Structure formats: C-alpha cells, structure tokens
Image 1 (cartoon, rainbow, N blue to C red):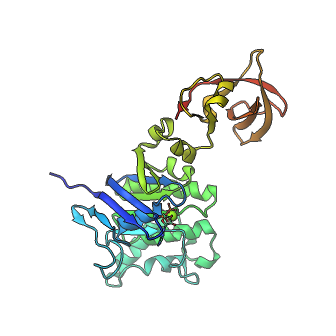
Image 2: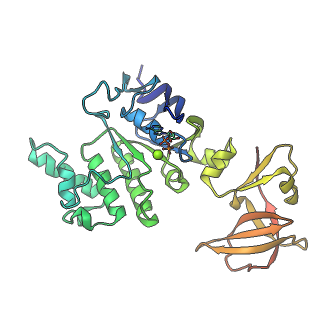
Image 3: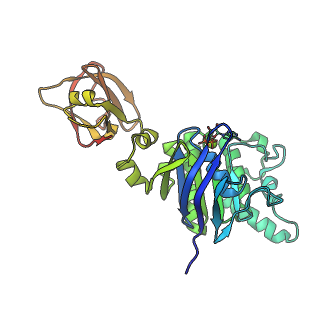
Length: 328
Ligand code: ADP
Ligand code: MG
C-alpha cells in the first residue's frame, strides 16, 4: 500500500476572534501545483501555516508521508523540515548582500563544491544568472520575489508553500515567474501549494484548485472544471468579473429562472446583429487583442467580450447572444 503524500483530516483551528479553518480534509498530490483560492479572511494563510506546522490545529491533523506534522510546541525550529514557505514579506533577505550570497548562505559549508553547484542551479532555474552579482537592494520587487523563491528552493524542499507571493509583482514578472515555477515542478517533481485571491495567479498555475469560504473547502477540481462549472456563485465571483443578475434582471436577457441568481461570464455573451438591438453600448474597454463592452438595457448592465475590436463605439446599439449561463 502506498502512503499518501500530504493529507489533512478534519483539520480545525478557530481563533479567539472567530476566524480560522473548519474540518478540512485534503489529499494533496505529489509533484503537482495545488492552489487554494478564497476571499480575504477566508482562512488561506491559516491553512498554509497548519500544513507547514507553524501553528497547531485545535483538532484534526496534518500528515506528511504517513507521519503527523508537528506544531511549534513540539518542535524546536518551527516548520516541517521537508517544506519551505514564501510569503510577500522580504524580511529574510539581506538587502546589502549580493543575490548569490543571499541564496548560498542557506547551504552548509561542509561541502563547498555542492554549495556552489546548488546555488548555480537554482539561479539558472529561476533565470537569475544575470542578477547574481547585484545587491538585493538594487532589485525590483519582482526580482526580489525571485530571490525569496530561490532561497526557498536551494535547500531542495519536497514541498514549496506560497502565500500570495506574486501580489506585489507586476504582470509581466508574474507570468514569467509562474512559468518558471511550473517548469521546476515538471523537471524536479516539486510539490507546490499556493494560496491566493487572484484568479490570474491560480488559473494558469494550478493542477488542482480548492475553493475556501469562511474556513471551509466548498469545491475542488481542475481549474477548467471549477471555472466552467462553478458550484457556487462565490467561486465564479472569485475567478472572474462575471455578470450576476437577479431573476428579474435575467428576464431582460431573455432568461427565465426559478433560482435567485444567474451568472454569466463575459465570454459567454456575444454581440449580435439583427433588428432587435435593445442594448446600448455604454463603455468600450480596450484590452489589446480584445475589448470588453459594457451594455445597458432597461436598467440592466452586462459586461461582454468582443473579439472584433473597434466595431462598436459608445452609443452603438447591439443585440446579444447568450451562449451559456449558470443559475444559483
Ligand atoms: P486569509 O489568508 O484568507 O486572508 P487568514 O487565514 O489570514 O485569512 O485569516 C482568517 C481569519 O482569521 C480572519 O478573519 C482573520 O482576521 C483571523 N485571524 C487570522 N490570524 C489570526 C490571529 N493570529 N488571531 C486572531 N484572528 C486571526
Ligand atoms: Mg492571507
């Protein structure tokens, strides 16, 4: 029988103020990226710190390769030895030392050759060779974040825990860093668990997506499934700037429902021709290779995707074709 990699059973931790996590049962797969998404305050950081052993649960437990993960009361140096955690904080970086030394300092001096080789390897994996001789203080926010991740990886942990690490990083840096981390996962079998409230961070990174609401996992699956068929409106709203209509607003879109709400992603709606152009274009939001249109009809606003940039202007009248929607 093969033991599970990283699991939790009925993991519960409640703070005196009431926040925390409740009855979390997880079975995290080795060599995958697992992303946990949830609103601010939903318990993401708490869950991560429990997995790592920085906090002890009130009840339930975390097991890594069949053994219980110890909390801070039971362990001299907090945090599981086979795991590393990166947060947004830069506190651990020595700003006035070179990038290379910030990374190498984490390795023992007992084998200097290995120390140099491992430092070189992680610099290469994270595409930082050209930054190696710079002082950390001279780096951009995104570059500093790369150093923090390199420091976590140089000791070759089995699990990398990321707590909204790309938050302060601008888009182009973020995409590159995400690609590099995914590549490391593929090449080395590293297991990554990341938490975020940002869809751009999780949708492209994750093999498995878990949705956390008020301390509980409410749905899980691969990102395509969770995005295309969200079981909760909460999930859709975390993952996209979706249209949420009440039942009476939905009627304006030609949708009759017995449920309270109708959710439609912008890309599920197409502008259409025909003579019944009930919708008025209120705003055109240029996005580069596509644009978003904000439409209005009888007090209802719709955000829709338009692939043919430049076709409509403010005040244009259009019809809409709604391909799909979900009712809640
Ligand atoms: P997230 O990372 O999803 O924003 P957290 O896990 O940090 O959420 O926090 C979950 C809830 O628990 C929040 O309501 C927060 O205020 C509360 N909380 C977090 N840490 C503590 C703490 N050390 N003491 C008391 N309450 C806390
Ligand atoms: Mg947090």
